[in-house]
Amino acid sequence: MLFQAIRMCRFLQKRNGLRRDLLNACIEDSKEKWKTGLCILAAAKKKPFLADSKFLKYKGFTVCDEADNGIQLWYLPFKAGAAEPHFRECAKHPHIDEKGYVLYYTHQCPFNAKYVPVLEDTAKDAGVVFKAMLIDSRDKAQNAPTPITNYAMFHDGEYITNEQMNDKKFLKLING
Image (cartoon, rainbow, N blue to C red):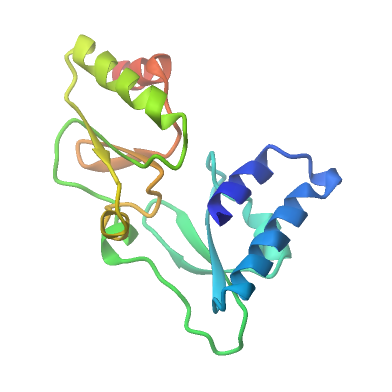
């Protein structure tokens, strides 16, 4: 729920207070479920579809871990002395051993259902090696080679983006 709410926040005007209200609702929901804190992904440098780190800092969150690709894990503890969360090693150092383009994705974003098949067709037509890996379980998400499991593109083993692509963006990427 939180990641969806934070993504919605990016599209809302700061001055209307909806971003604050959505985050506060997530905090209250987490406290009602007896959680010890709340985690949100952001980045050292602004990246699409991630929370605004300045807003998180203003709301009392702090960075508790950072992956090699600049993705940060921000944490708001609800109790003093609560253990800080951290990325698993596989996510902290985003890298895979496969060649070509590999996309890790979930159905969390409804646009993935449309655009993943488009990328598969575009890659096939362009003669480019492309593999789409659906993350459809908690175990797969926790063991993914990236902290961003909603959409993470790799090329020849290296993480390149979490920005969702259509056929035109993908062709631009593969044609350099």
